[in-house]
Image: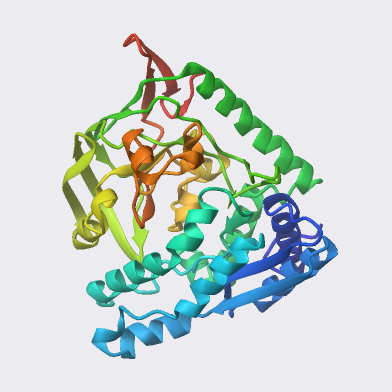
Amino acid sequence: MSSIDGGTSSVRAYAEQVVRSGLNLRPGRRLIVWRAPVEAPDFVAAVAEYAYRAGARLVVPMWSSDAVTLARFRNAPPDSFGEYASWSTQALHEAALQGDSFLLIPSSNPDLLRGEDERRVSQAVKTESRHMQRYLDLAKANKVVWTVIALPSQPWALKVFPELPASEALARLWREVLSFCRVDRDDPAAAWRSHVEEIAERKRYLNARRYRSLRFAAPGTRLTVGLPPGHLWQGGQAETPEGVAFSPNMPTEEVFTLPHRDEVEGTVAATKPLYYGGLAVEDFTMTFRKGKVISVSAKRGERQLEEIVATDEGAARLGEVALVSHRCPVAQSGRVFFHPLIDENAACHLAMGLAYRFCLERGAELSEEEFLASGGNGSMIHIDFMIGSGEMSVYGVGKDGREEAVLKNGDWAF
């Protein structure tokens, strides 16, 4: 493969890895590309080419434009941000019901809505979350094949590498993203398989330990997260009920499970910015009592943080706890990437809101009331925020109260 610089070779190599290793696209499937960026038609075309080569019957891009999004926030009527093109999410839901696969490409411009009205942003995000709920219920239960990726762009590159000229920044970002996804290896698909098997080994270890809770200790963080009986550690790859394996996230470094919604105690300090609807929340802390957020503070974006935890009853509780080694490639790059997918794979993190049913034994079989009674959490949101660093240690607490190190100074202790 020629040098990785964001040119044609990079675009094609990335598209092939996403289709083969991320989606593991099966012959006869249809592929929906959600939020296909109009700014990157070559990448979307490459995805379509490799999908058809893999036997896809139809590839449907549902296009998105950062410029159109920005035009709305600057010019639309103030009372229109509760409106949504419901036909689009209806189409997603119908496609999921018939077994289509999904590639999701979030906007990669972290400052797109900087300076825009926070109330409009919050209302727009909540409206979309509400309309997406039926599709997300299927995706988050792994009843469909889905993969989320990060696609380099010029605005994102300049945010991450402000010291470089524009062309060099974009080339550098491409090199980083493709390296995180193992595309720069001689055999990218084999390298990805080896990587997810390493993650599977960690899952097997943690599932055998059956910890009652996790204790997090780091500067600004003293937090205990209870784990419900029957919790399952996940990560790397997921599997549909029909047995099709896929990688929901590219890149991925985490192992994760669900916390007990009523058993989170203490204070946690974020170590990276949180981006919510294109706006940043920075240098923030949250304090929990009996599983619920009782106070928040932030140097920037505190109002946005308050909006997040007030979204619905479950938004003030945790739906995910994830462990990531500080020695993983994303963390070792030494950069904040200002992109949730990349940054969550650089650090231990938590998520406010929805808990995944596949993180609980027989979770998919439970009613909503039974899931909540088992310690799971429900919400229309699932928002990750990063808390890990090279100074963090995590201890697993057994049923007998004895502790053992899981992470020590940011790295795996087992």
